[in-house]
Image (cartoon, rainbow, N blue to C red):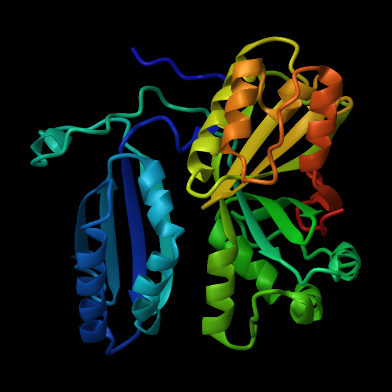
Length: 380
């Protein structure tokens, strides 16, 4: 019998096969153009390492509704593909055909029939070993850079916005928004109960949010026009920073917990490896006793890795655990994975690690939580 972990967790690093489901609603008359675009996409993705198979399905009840499913050896190769510039360019022709989309991603836990073994030449991947315990929260982040020298101006604008209403619809609600900066990089992490896409669309439509987004436009390194759907979509696609791992310690949240975001600029091509190292360390810390880190969420895209942690007490009380590397070998591995000019010599004393930790601790701009007692109220 498979045991259920009592610890809240999610992970892209458990080695299990991944099933991706893409729901699409086509514009009237766009079927021919869609099928042509899909053939191009299918031929491109077939050569991506880690891809096993895909299916295109059409609804028997509403022919305008389509379904694309794909299977991957594991989550990391899919995430590397879906977050790449190649993917952004490949799916661009689909946008003119599709009225609405929704992407769902699942680890394979059980299956019947011959399943995976029936796919010729494929030997990697397996089933998720045990179900994980969820908390009904979807975690996501956005990141972008602003023009050097304008960081203070952007921070002031972002800190002064009026929060939108927390309730999106009957089943979706904004739970928390945390915004940080490191140099000229901005990271906005959000927690949503319900449908993430519905929440993102809800926030984007709010006039107070739109006003702030327009105000920071002149200071962004990547140009965008929020009145142009294609420009806005491309910006937010490139800004997406998905959560690849989350773990929370058992028990109630301590009263002295504070939220920090740590930015780990990875060496070229090493972002996923670095994220996996931190994830493994956080699981080990959650299983042990005495860690000040109550929960950790790791966001990763290409070579950008951000670790959002809720820490009990001062960040430097147990600096190695706060940094995510408990032990000299793990610290040395982290040093090798960091971008040149960032790593330096990894110190071994608590005092040295505290100084090293300070390099990665992002500056907090806002951290707003919705009131659990009043779901229709704005974040406070």
